[in-house]
Image 1 (cartoon, rainbow, N blue to C red):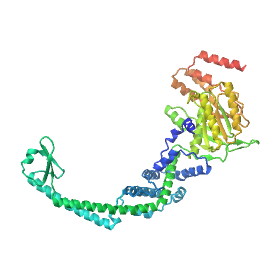
Image 2 (image 1 turned 90 degrees about the vertical axis):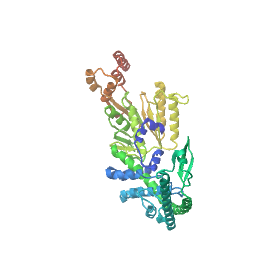
Image 3 (image 1 turned 30 degrees about the vertical axis):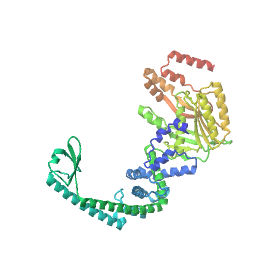
Image 4 (image 1 turned 180 degrees about the horizontal axis):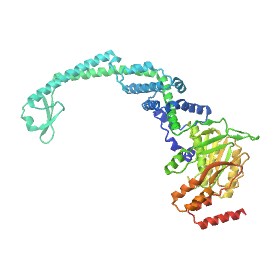
Length: 541
């Protein structure tokens, strides 16, 4: 599956998928691949249910605001006894309630968004302002009384401190009103004689650090305040324990809210992508494509005006045209021939991209899309130069093919083969690939989409053959006579402009005859191009 994701550039799209909650992001990281039709249909139903709300900007903004403010809470185990946990639970409940209230009742029912924690939230609201939370006096009369004692002590301590500071200022001229100590010269301090209301200690180089001495009454009252504060902490702990007990008693609801938030968050984000990229809901087949002995077809896979997002965005930057892809696959063995640079690999990438989108629970960027479900997608191909663990690229291909065959035991498997066996000689490559296609055709769970240059393949009955429409030679011939010189970038633009990236269903293997023409466009010497054309013509005789 990893190679299929890399080949189809699926992660380019997946990076645009950005759930807002920690629960939605955790779901994203799972990279779920739905193989059960009912589960996938449910996932798509969630997008259906919320898409119209997301389309309304004001509603979307409210949903996203509250989703963004959902904190992480852990409701699978009893919550720890701390005011910090209570703050998170209150913030969680406030935003969950707001999200549920935005959704119509019918939509809430689809997401399992059933509110049942009014009593708990009202209890926590006694200690809340906005999204904050504190242990308020109203939770305990004993706690309120203790805090009144502490307040009285604070007022008395402040009065004693201010009185002493006024005395020191009047007697010595030192101002401690906004500081705890002063640094003065030793000789200046000595001039005041013996002092009982100042404390001094050496600082550096003939200077002293001096501090006020507030007296026994102040120190006794400060000690009493510390005792009161310790008793307050005990009473606060009792309140926290009572509130935590109430929260833990509501854990079942909290767990349901987490699941509902996860579903809503991912659906909102998938709906946003569907709207922004003009995506539609895919249809899901009950079985793999198959042509019966009578010629009837069932379960065909179909793409109509499908847009391969990574390529579409890339071409937009270079101002090259992009042609949507349309195709229908009615059999399990599908073979694609075509010219160099004619779009075979893009056709494979588009197909895999859409299969991954659909089975990951997304809408798809197409006018219409119908897919079958596979247990796994196996990409077998490469750039002809890959090597790993001492294996040649051919060895890697064989190893990947063997692994893919093993997947058939677990369920329907999609084989994506791009120029399979390209690095061996054409005779052996053709024989091996013909045998592989015949073997896979006997496995009811195998679906093959193959792009190849190899000629003379012996494909099984009921295989489907395709070719890329390729280069529009006539149109380009007229254009090229007037535009014979250009740099490489412009030459590539010309090829793109006159290349028809359309996949045609043909009755048998078709021949590719665009490679020589494209080589000429790219600047290969005319003498070489003419000689290549003559060799091709001689072989036809």
